[in-house]
Image: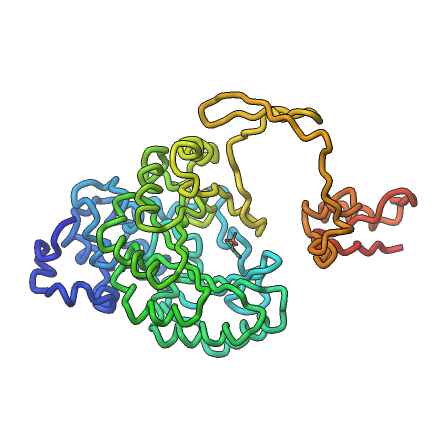
Length: 438
Ligand SMILES: *Cc1c(COP(=O)(O)O)cnc(C)c1O
C-alpha cells in the first residue's frame, strides 16, 4: 500500500489525522478532480462519475482509495468503488427493490421476512459507496439516519412481535453513526426482553478501519451478545489496518462473520476466494455467506452465472478448513429470501445405502442403520413445546401433503372447481389452513 504522503493532496496530513475515522469520512473522494489525484481515471470512469451524480452517490475514503492500483482500471478495489459508464445501463431483469424489502416492511426501514429475525436500516450513509450496492435505491442520497419517530415505530413493532429474537442493523453502514447514537439504539433494543441477539452489518473494517476505536468496542461490549458481519470481497482488502480492526472487535468479544458478494472481474475465481477465506480466518473472521449478485439496477456488469458460485465452493470445501467455507446463497428476487446453492454430494440412495462423493471425487457408500429413524416427537419435550413447523420442515413433520402456490388458491376459489372431501386441507407457508370460499 502506498504511503498517503506520496499523494500531493495529503502530503501534509499527519498520521494521527489520517487514522482519525471522522477525518476519513470528511475527506471522502467524490469528484473526478479528487479521484484523479490518486488514480489515473479512464474515460469510462470519468463518464461514470459524472453520470452518478443524482443517481447513486460516489464517495471513497482516502484509506480505501490508496488500495487502488493507479494505473489498472481492472483493479478489484477500483471496480468496487469507482463507477464506470455502464453503471447507467439497465439490464433486462434489473429491479429497483429486487429483494422486496419495501414490500415486506411492517414499519419504515424495517423488513420482516424470516420467522424470528428482522432487518432494520438505521442510516443511509456509508464510508465508501460500493458500486455493487444492492440497496442503491435508499443509500447515499441524503446521508441521513433513521428519525426518532421511525425508530420508535420500528421498536413498537419489534416489541409487539415476540417471535423476533434477532435484530439485524444495516443501512447504509450502522457504524457511520456516532458511538452515542449507536449506544442509544442498542440500549433501546436491549430493553425488549425477547431480543436475544443483535447483529450489525458493516463495511467499516474494510473501507475505514479506523472507525473501530477502543471507545466503539466498549460501547458494543455493553450490549452483548452483539455479532458483526463485515464485507471483504478480495484478499487485498485485508491490510494490516483492516486486520487490526477485526482483532479489536474480536478482543471485545464480538463474533465476526464475513459476507462476500460474488462480482465478475473482482472475485469470480476459486483461487482468489481461497486466498480471501484464508486471510479472513487468520484475521479471526469466519466466512459466512457468499452472495450471488442481486438484480438491482445497474449491476448487470457484475453478474456471474450461478454456476460460478458452485465452482468456487468446489474449490473451497475439503481444500480449506471447514469453518473457512461460506454458504453460497442467492437472495431470491421478489422477496424469496436467501436460498443456499451447493455442489451435490449425494449421488444416489436406497433405503439401505446412501452413495456420496467427497471433494476428491471418491465415491463412497454409507450404510444406513437398519432401525431407520427412531426419534419420537410424541415423547420429545422440544417437539411437544415447539410451534407448528413452517415451510418445508412442516411438510416433513406435519400431516399436510403440500404447500401450494397462491395461484392454486385462486383457481380453487372458482365456483366451478369442486373439492372432494378426500383432498386434504391445503396450508399456507406458516401452517395455517387456507380458507376456502363456498
Ligand atoms: C439476510 C436477511 C436476514 C438475515 O438472514 P440470516 O440468514 O439469518 O443471516 C434477515 N432479514 C432479511 C430481510 C435479510 O435479507
